Image (cartoon, rainbow, N blue to C red):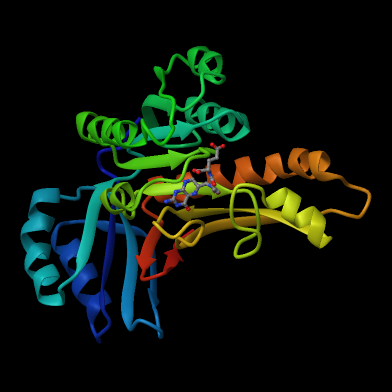
Length: 283
Ligand SMILES: Nc1nc2c(c(=O)[nH]1)N[C@@H](CN(C=O)c1ccc(C(=O)N[C@@H](CCC(=O)O)C(=O)O)cc1)CN2
């Protein structure tokens, strides 16, 4: 249940003295009580990042009236939203169901503040899982002849449901540069390796051949450069020489599902801010 008296504000702008004073002053002027505040200045980009949670008696319209001028003066990018509002999320999947299953369970349990109006897949395999959670499921075969039409449909769905986030839950098709541009900053993929190692469709086979002692998973924003997008979350686990590729794949599933779920939660709570090719994460 959304607490309409509990708000969050995120902001990013070129760093300069006095930003925190001006932002908190506007919040107080709007009768707000700050319950959480995090900030960071990137020495690399020179940009300032801030996330504030505000409670009690906060007059949104008054705040926006006061803050809009400050934001213009700072040339800031900012977002104001309710704490806990469920973000409208489209999920793309293929045959592997472990990441989708975790997302649906965590969404149903309330751990993940998202709503999923639709799941789109290029295989029918996960239809029963979607039905179990009462979420509509569409299958669209993807091959060189159908890819453009399927991607147009994805964009139509994004517009129809006013989608805020697209999650690639082991969706094994490479999105076109055009679709990546449309979904820039609002599409998250789970890659089944500890990036930047072992990019591509078969990272566990690459890991086995290399003889690594740790395997992992990486959740990142989707860009047209395959597996190169800004990283949001990563996890690893120890493996050894006795493990063949099927065991590595099985052991990696837990890392993949928890890494993707945590990345989606961080995004849904407005705790992920982009700083060029990097991310700022306010946990
Ligand atoms: N534009 C992007 N699209 C996708 C990304 C990305 O980073 N940028 N990540 C992938 C997921 N992925 C690895 O994490 C991955 C998926 C698929 C492939 C691949 O080579 N697919 C083949 C088809 C394979 C098949 O049909 O089974 C292909 O698309 O030709 C590489 C990496 C999701 N999309």
